[in-house]
Image 1: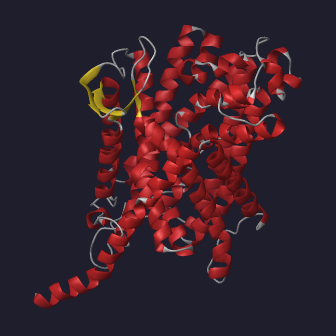
Image 2: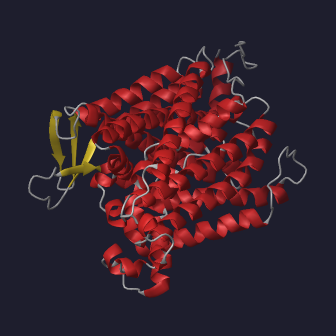
Image 3: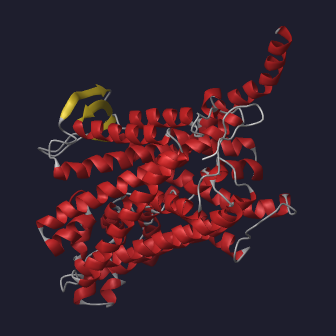
Length: 515
């Protein structure tokens, strides 16, 4: 790989990612642990196989329409930082900063921490000593609600983050080699799960196998479901209640399908971005959405609805494979998810650091974050992201009334991810709306790719996203409110950094005059 330096002589990013590499970042960042876990909660919210598939399908519509819009912005502005740059240029530096701040504080780093813990949880299937209750450092309580600890499970998660962070500092070639290898492997494994489920798993005990496409598929009340069993404090009934709970059921699928925009964070490193970025987004998102729908179909043809809803620790995929292959299926599924989470975290770590790098170059983050090492990667940004993600694995929530024998501690970062989902959807909607804004703001700007179906496609995304945001705000106002609070903690930070950025040229001029 050729050396590249900026005009000042400093090392800079290089365009070392082709179409295959960019597509693997999209696919690899999306396929993590969500597809194997979140269907249980979604099934509890909607109470029937048909509406479970509908939740994943509507989430897929958001993903595909979002990718169609994002591709136009990515080809207009193929720069490091991706969505941060789009929001900055379409609206203001403040909006871009709030996105980047939220990404660093919890969206990206919290996801990295959660996925690393997911890896460690399933490693515990193979090595039982790796457990959330096998402590290297016993929990240290911080008041009534939180504690800090270091279990063997948390230690393995930290090791995974550290290994992948260090590996990515050795250059784009090393990072993309891991990404491509693990993405190919876990995609093939997911395809295997689907084929086994749809061929060997068809069961008369499931709603699909026993009563294919009967009213039970679309009538949750026939399955003993009520809105109040899904959400005890919910007051509504009837079709409107089901529609609102469908929005709540989409939270898991949206989390499982998130991070498709990560490839735009590496915009400065993709070769022929006008051609490769839109293709990577559309191929990658289309492939993953299709696989996710088929995986859920495999679940519902194999398992009774109650088994999906009550899967131990929500491990629907493990229960599915166990039902088909017995005990070996559990081990096979654990290995599959370990491969999946390892590859997913590599993509998240590789891409996320590019946003903080772009913010630092705009003088809106720590100056050192903008440095690129001799391997042409933002190593300081990678290190900062890795350290914070490791720290997010340490806090634990304290359960107020744990059951006898139950672990009294939970994971705080999963709460943080739940808090941020509504705010994250707002940022996605703002990005899609930026396509419309930039059509008016910069009509003459080169657009190697133009959004298919404009303006109907962006309008469809914005309408569904805003309805979902309002739905979640109504159903869980405290959770959504905390999410917005986390975002807005960035406002005073932005004002401080903006002031420093304004003063920096004068400081540098004074220093040069003194020299």
